[in-house]
Length: 241
Length: 199
Image 1 (cartoon, chains in turn brown, cyan):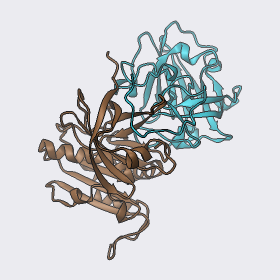
Image 2 (tube, one colour):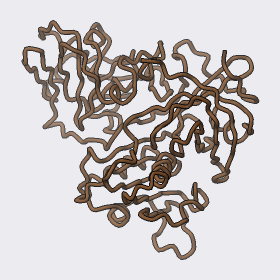
Image 3 (cartoon, chains in turn cyan, brown):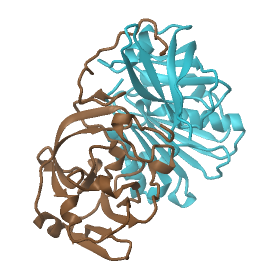
Image 4 (cartoon, chains in turn yellow, purple):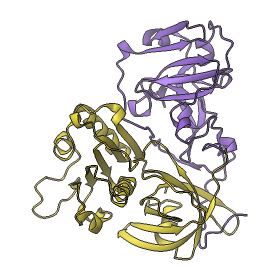
């Protein structure tokens, strides 16, 4: 078994998603490909040789030697401020991966899918949505995206565009747009009962976000009768960056 | 020869020889699990060791609590790169649980409530290297961190320290567990940075 090598990755594109998050597009010669939901390790090395690594979910499906990440700036973080504020096209980092064979969606899968994302937990779920679209899969997807307020939405324009077989629902925990029917607040049983699939459809559920959100959403899915083996979770700690 | 990331300086709070390569320090306690958190009532909790002769040794919660308790203070290292130094636990050494167990095999498969598994050589569980712990930092272990009880094998990456531990099966052959069949390293030594298959 060959060790997963570190590969040179050159930044070729940038998209601002919110005030504090941006999508970075890297060109990684020799990239072996990945599945939607997998993550990569990113290594930064300073001129004096000091280096540090972090893990980030990939935001888009396999497409040649391109690796797309969306990074949220963690206040007081070490790596995310560099990736969200300093790096410019042409600059290099190192990337190793892909990593993780559990929190993944495969285009050949036939089960309906429920995606439940909290905050930056949307990133690997967006990779799944994009992978579905790219593969021309007709498997029905539903996304429930929980955010503090509307200004925190990633991929807002893309998620507004019609995509047959994909339903997108939002819930806001702190502030809602004018006229929004649901008051601001954390995810509840009714949110998942309305936006999700009946447990009898045996959907594959993917839950990603901060620990508290994932714990709450996974518990609610269990309460709605979804089997634990159909609930895959990925937790983003507040730490790191 | 590393690639330099132009303009990156870094924070370098990492100058600590207790920190394995590629890790950074945290003060809080992040959570990583693959599925929902199982809840196990104590009156139905049990821990078992199954030997290759199919002899099963079982402990109820009360029996576990009646065994000699140890309070290891150890550094823990998660494969997702965070490390936490000097964590305080309370629980029972695996040496105590293995005291009356006869086995000649070399491999252990640890299994959990909720279906998680992880594998390691039996010798990594013995000689003061592993515990079944039920308290963290003086408090009962929270379900999200593996309560009521988890395995603690601090010299390996933390995914080997199975949360919600239910038992250990002793095997003639190595039998890769949940993350070990999903691209992670079979052994997981943080000091050799054995994160992924092939490292």
